[in-house]
Image (tube, rainbow over all chains, first blue to last red; front, top):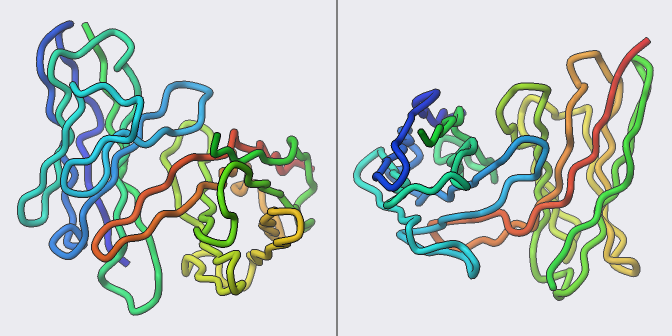
Amino acid sequence: SSELTQDPAVSVALGQTVRITCQGDSLRSFYASWYQQKPGQAPILVIYGKNNRPSGIPDRFSGSSSGNTASLTITGAQADDEADYYCNSRDSSVNHLNYVFGTGTKVTVL
Amino acid sequence: QVQLVQSGAEVKKPGASVRVSCKGSGYTFTKYGISWVRQAPGQGLEWMGWISPYNGHTSDAKKFQGRVTMTTDISTNTTYMELRNLRSDDTAVYYCARDVMAATVNWFDPWGQGTLVTVSS
């Protein structure tokens, strides 16, 4: 099955911009969705598809995609954005329904 | 509001089975699939499988094939995930999530609150 690779950790100064990337062959066929997870909590959806935000997600979160790479950008990072972020997509390498999660990126807001 | 509520924490011995429930509310239950995802302590998210409450069709991750069974009871808007022959490395928080599918994208929203399954002798 496919894999989705993310940088393990990134840091960003308060109010600055950070981009988190997710690489994998499946992203050439399917868009990614992105999830934020804080310690002890269930993940929440922050971005899906080309660049769609669920209601309640601040507009400082945005998504993009090119080739085999999907990106999540936080513009003007806030302390509340400190969390783990995971990408996810359908797996294009198999004939049946199968999903794959990225390895996760820990975002630290300095 | 759309919500998924899972059953409580479980402690099991190696070799036993566990069944976790996930009850949906606030939407038409048969309109969306449910995926199951687990997270071992300090680790990332791992997709386990999917079920359609509409027709009961399932798709399991290769890693869990033969050990996992997902079922649904539309009379109570509840989906179940049973994992058999438990090992210590099955200790994890198990999540259900509503699975929304479009042609070239899917997303999981919302998620259940998670169920901690501890496997220990």
